[in-house]
Image (cartoon, rainbow, N blue to C red; front, side, top):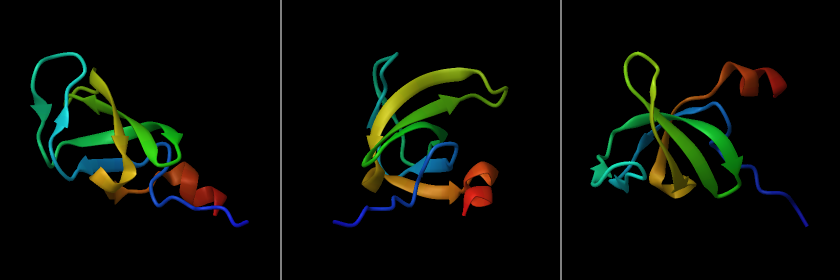
Length: 80
């Protein structure tokens, strides 16, 4: 049985494709919100949303199909 290689992994920069419910405050993060993958659970990614000073605003779990890859991490590229 082959393994599935996910396009988005840890440390990658992503954008949300559609609104995702916030975990800390009411409401949603709008489509286009940029974040970073901090943990990769296969099809589900733990994404950190931060402000322009790098302060964490929220951690959200998002299915990979609801994410758009913006930039691969330098760490991931070095392993290829």
